[in-house]
Image (cartoon, rainbow, N blue to C red):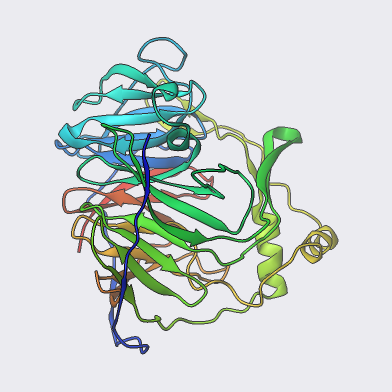
Length: 389
């Protein structure tokens, strides 16, 4: 395995002032699949516009035809040939094939262009850095992009160092190149523990702390959103990195209400069951509801954690659409259920703002399309497709 560090000069562009930009809205879906999912984590549109969907909470893979309303399972769960246990991520590869990151089986399940399982690739056949890092994207050439906290070529480490390394991986040679680093909360510890009644409690000892986020474009450029100053950098495969000017943003204070809402949000169901009736209709079965912590308990836990004075300017997952525009999720108060994104060009400038429908989240992009997940009052999720503006 070779390991090379990519060194880039930087070109700063733009002005500090955020230009006046228009606000757009995604208003009406072209299609919504009628069947619910429990937790959609990854989607991958095929050339025929069918969609491979990874449902993490039920550990299922589906092939969905939104136009026809059809949904079939892609492969069986298990450890045998052409089976999987947990679909941790989906990787869209050239030729319309797909890799399913199956951590529990320590391998990738390979799907052909029709989303049929055709084989597996063991993690042991790739460098440890590749399958122990956090995958976040793939470019049109099939190069993988991942990040790992505290990674060093000479002294690999999993420590919470306050810095994450982004790497670009050539699948043919397993050559690993460093792209840049991200700043993350130093000393942060994250995890989850089971509670009675099928509930899960998430753990985060640095709640709402600012951290850089990254996304990859089809041409291999890596976009990095720097916080708390909020500026966007573009790191190409070769050449000079472009660093945008700071982007104006609203400073949202972390109030007692924000702290309580975050602590309360850490408790969730471990699984949501969907019942299929003989009539073909589906609905949610009786499931454990989130137990509301008493106000005093909320305050006690909230007061035991370190909090920033303001929310970071951006929170969540950034994605690059097929045109190369970066969608950056802006922070919003806990009682605002309408997601909002800054659309950022290749020079780090905001060209427009996009508002999504209430109680939706961005799932990915396709051929002229954007995919959202709508969440209903029972926390069931529905896959939607909109025309990309």
